[in-house]
Length: 110
Length: 450
Image (cartoon, rainbow over all chains, first blue to last red; front, side):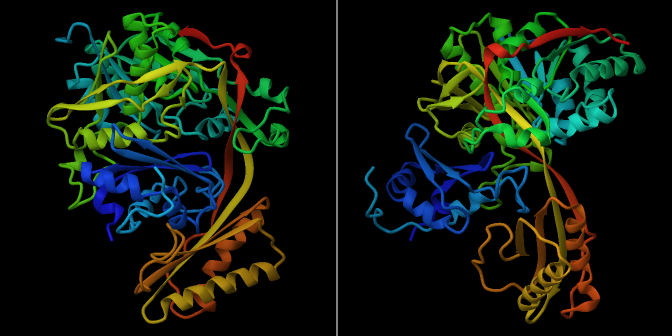
């Protein structure tokens, strides 16, 4: 099972109560795996205990990167969150910790 | 100075109010810069500084203004580097006067500042209770009684007006972060709000630089995986902008960090939602066709940014009182540590309930287990730190959390140590609305040195 961490690097940003997390492929082969297997459904599953979403997924083929926009992820927003990591900076490592299926996720239709 | 003809060199000197100070001094001394930009305003900073200004009318600018400006003023003036900064926060005029005072006190002589105001739109918002909050769609009316600030994110046009005064320093309150970088390029090259590919380039350059070392390896480092040399001395970035809209991101030789495709991609996507429609004060940016090209060690060229015209509204961030957060912490270690921390959490909550305190939200963290990603992934750790945080409108109720947590030291469960002093934070939260551009009047004035 490939792990996103081994295929990509990424960073989380915050706006209000929404976190955006980039997932940037380390090489073209990694991009192929990420593009087909790191689906919105897979990310939603990994973040289900933090937010019901919605989650938006954007592909940037030129950069070989994905951008996930995860609504409701920041405990009411950076300025009012009860969390220690109010900005959700560490959420990128939750994303990178996702394990991907060996075959493309069935519900994925890129 | 041997500045390259036709290319504008802009350095990023700060990405938030408490950023490191010495990298900017290095840039001012060795950077061969035309501009040094200091971005020091987080979303709620102005709200906090507005409260400061209400108490002390001569304050309300970024608290570390003097500490940050003092060491760079001399090298900037000597090297012909103009400074553009939003450190004016809630009181740009006072910031301008304060910079003038530094010039006088340190023997640098008069330092006139061009001051940008007009971002404060509290009265406009107060008169429009029906404005929908961007995130929730609800009318802003409910926030109005608790509102402490409302500031529009101004764009490059008013910064260009300030630059046209030829003062060595431009001080603003709230402006869009990348506009601090675009404006010098518009001013130098005469770009207008029709040159969308160039405006896009300038905004991308600003976006890449506005988080300082994030683009030069700071946020990228992960030992053994993403190694970054000499991270303790990471250099802050420089953008070289050409009149044709070419952009190269680089950093000073001899500094730590790395500028490459990986670090630039991370910063390029930072805080972007739809990459084809990133709304800024100056344009709607599209980065989907951006290409990054490594042009040598620590040099990355950025091409292909596109933009649609700016929208007809300003984003306005409203700061408002949002009650208190109270917090307490205590540590447990050894066998059964986690169970004791959980028992402790139950005790604190039962005690608070018994004492009649009610909270709109309670969060229990086991630091080392569940505090950051909110779900335990690994086996139980040897030691754990309990953290309880609550939200309330009652200061006493907020204080009680910390006191009840510390009282566990003596009242058990066993082995609780290192209880924190009770923490109470008065919360200034923010929400955003849009208001029509035509209602806002950005202004420029020049402060002469005292």
